[in-house]
Image (cartoon, rainbow, N blue to C red; front, side, top):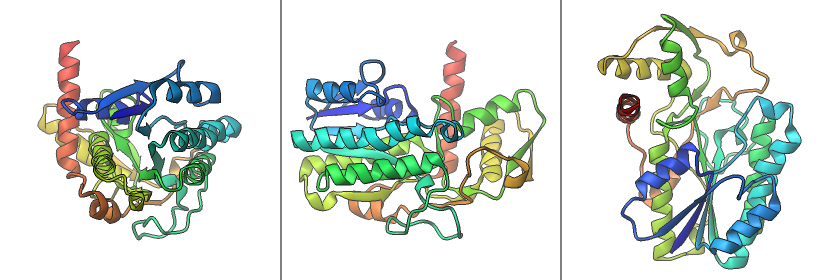
Length: 298
């Protein structure tokens, strides 16, 4: 079985590359310029060249605030390109596993979002991701798995955890938003969740697997508490531990609207694919240890 993964240099793709070590499938990782989500020709050419059995759509336009200034590009990459991927997958008899986001919900309330809840994105980014979901469903109605995730962190790339560590190098106090709630999700868990989907598709390719699922960390918290957890684990490894001061969203204005409630209910994914994400604290420790090893090797 051949699996094509987009977004080769992103957090999820890099984590998937590691998690897939030793497996029997052939994984092919692609990225720009040979594969460019803004260029439909390169999308179709890459899929036809590699002829995958499963496509993992992990690449995306993720600049949430910048998207407000360039909505057409965000919609081309997040809204239209996934439909092209799904169309090529359907034509080839392949499945598509497409990554989406908590931003497709409106962010109100306090209850964790379930897959069947109404969507209502408040930002261009969220709107573009919802457009992509709809395009995937339309193009590959019986051979898609859409995974909505949130607050992704890892030892790779740009993410909240790495930003906090960087800021802690020069500041003794950090002001962090405390009225936005979500599930911090380790990219390694997303990778393992994707492999669980791959295993089920390989075993049966039952179209009853097709659908939309939430895949997120097991614990909901606000950004400030997430920062405190990061610094507590970092301090245990000899890192710095600045004071975290709670602030409101109003005190930290951004161009794009951030959802106040990004809590995700992942029970449907666990019931269908038999995989549950692991505790946040232990995942943070894994990531911090990985970063320390990488820094020591430089």
